[in-house]
Amino acid sequence: MMRAMMGGGGASKTLQLQLGSGQTNPAPAADHLPPSGLQAGPALPLLTPKPVQTQREEPREYDVPEQYQKPKGKMLIFWGCGERARPGQPYVIDFAKMASGQQNPATLFKGIDYRPMQPPSVQRNRTYGEWPNEKTRDLVPSNGSLVGAHTIRGNYSPEINFTLEEDQDFLGPINLTTNAKAPGGWVNLGWNLVGNAQAYYATAMGGDGDTVVMWTSSETQAAGFSNPDFLSQSDINRLVANKTLMGPAQKTCAVPKEVLDAAPSAIAQLVAYGGEANFVYPPRPQDPKVTWNQQWAVKVRYRSATGGILGQEMPNMGGGGRGGRAGMPGAPAQQPQQ
Image (cartoon, rainbow, N blue to C red; front, side):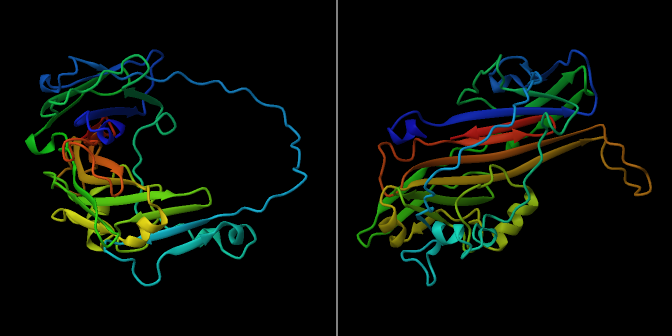
């Protein structure tokens, strides 16, 4: 993102692979064998992290500060595209009132209503491997492609084979084509439509030492923190339908004047969500009475993102930013980044 803000760097792609298994091996080892078009080498080693030993700390007595300083500051939350903030905005969270019990924190912080995905991890699986890792951090070249046959071979999992088609490649780069402050004080955001993107979501955050300002493009109240990296297909469909996310044909959004007035140097981010691709072996039996004993499952997740200073056109606007990202939990995870 910093390269893009300085007017260079262009689009980049990232790939994350995660393999989880219920099997164990005293010397776990696995490789993801990608198609040659990825141009990242013939084999990507899925390293199993070594267990981290934690030392038990003796209980400590903490000093109570002589003078307790009451929390101060506010959070201003705006939402929705438009030249002016809508009636009832901003929603104000007063930290002093929250500390004194006058505002209930449980009802204040409304994020996007979605179900977080559960990718493989050290905590969820008996054996886990990942790439990149501490031994291999190779990058995917900007012209690398996921299209073709993929194989995962390891000594703690069955062999996994699946093929990604042309429409399952890295999500394309998303670029801000417009990030201009209008004479009326609002900012007109514009971007290119990304092939295979199913939804868009814009956020901005700024403020000063005592005030935090957040804005999201959601038509329903949602604070711009803890935004999801990836979304399931069902969540994308639901969130587009209720206008939490912008649809795949939308390519403009105005950030209200009041957001700029409260945070003149806010950081903006724009994300394109590309859904997912799923593979399971063996396929579901046609007879519902037959037990479906799955040997392996692969999920490929996609996103693309870019950002910059809200209201400040950057050199080479439309050519920089962070591009698509993809992730394959279950076996691989891909991340294209603009």
